[in-house]
Length: 189
Image (cartoon, rainbow, N blue to C red):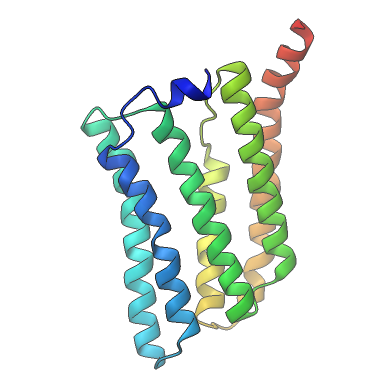
């Protein structure tokens, strides 16, 4: 598949707009953290923002399938929006809530390598990467750890080792699955 083919399908679909709208939650989250209010307000505003972001993440895929709007662009746009939201959210937590910078760097490197690798597989090998349970569980662990740091809950640092374990498992699973595709293609040349 070429980059041009990504854009031969409809671009402005409800699903793609929902994926893009999820990124709009980042400035709202920044504003909430940068302009301290009472703890109850922060929890309310943060809860509403995170609910919006989670709802759009669920709805974009659901509506794409339900309305017949699945497109290659949308299948790539959704995880890119997720990566932007995750990395931006963790960066805000590093700055405002003492989330470990090294964890954010590990997550960023994983996401960047995954995006580049996924783009390579899509463009050069016509293989669209599929999410697996490790990746979904990893996002859940990031969210859980982020909530502990966001609200300064006790034992928040205890969320980091399980998060790193899940990330390591995900990296291993993706490397095993897609490494074969890359190596198989290299042997053919």
